Length: 443
Image 1 (cartoon, helix red, strand yellow):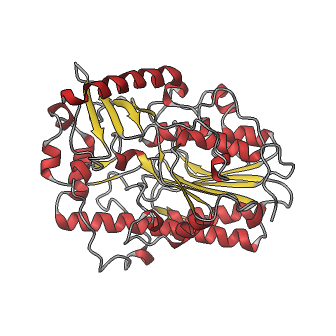
Image 2 (image 1 turned 120 degrees about the horizontal axis):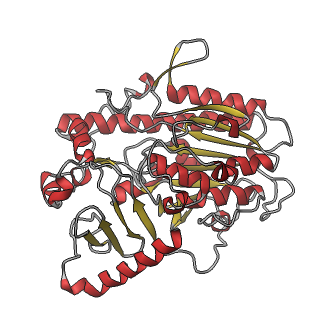
């Protein structure tokens, strides 16, 4: 085993960043889900560190992925739609080009998710695509293949190309378990996974009710894409069961892909010096609050799985469950720190490397800035403060702005808005000020 050292390690590790798409925090057995089958990722968590409180700062794919590449909040990187490409100055300071400049071989597979012109030139190995991608893919010979399986083959091909002693960084961005939007099948698993969960009855969340939807303010209920998508996925019991089972099947298929990649690492003798990071770009509503997809500040939308395993030193790892807040804005600094590459000063996240090894610096964050400013009338823009006992959200489109205050200690399902309760006025004022502070810092 290679002994772990902080930044400046003369033998930098290989790094694989595995990114799920629309996978909520409890989509893992190790996160307490009693039904889903994720043996590989559960095993990875038991070798490494499972971050119980991992979040994204903006729960939408393009903005979150821009944050993952740059280590910056949306307020700073400025990418708040699907069409904007990275500027050249941003590209030069994103982790792929910084690692490449430091001697890493870089690869990208799957959904790039930022802009209309994915930057293949950033990478030595490029199997990425623009847009959402399609589960019904074809391989190099034109034969039909499920996209998850194709990505697995591409990842293993990249690994087999690597030369001994030359570090590599592979970013693999799955489409799973994102629905195939505009396709009546919605979630489209591999055929071999269709028998999974067939005899299971998927529990319906307590907040997946008409009453929960009715309790939302009128402006929120008017022209809401998350409610529109709910109709096609969760609006009757049979549809709900089908959708959740297929969502789970896609996750299990992705888990198998990770298993195959880990097997390839073992067979090539690369496992002992390859750090694995697994995360999702945002969460996903499975009917909670009468919603589907993401976009809002509820836990199901902003909280995601995160596992980091550094095989070079088991200290502080081996299945430890970390409760400190980790964010998507932390991923780029973490990757650079692992590689011994200086983290640019404009990056706003913090390296998770010391946290992984149970040596977190004092004063670690206890909350963070939530911002969702994607400008679409059917997706209500909101900002706020997440973390700690109280969650503060502000919808910015109504005049006056509509505020939400949840006490997660007494109301973990986020069903009761306390913003208009005079007993919480002091707490509300404090969180308004905290939001102003965090928003100012993020620019």
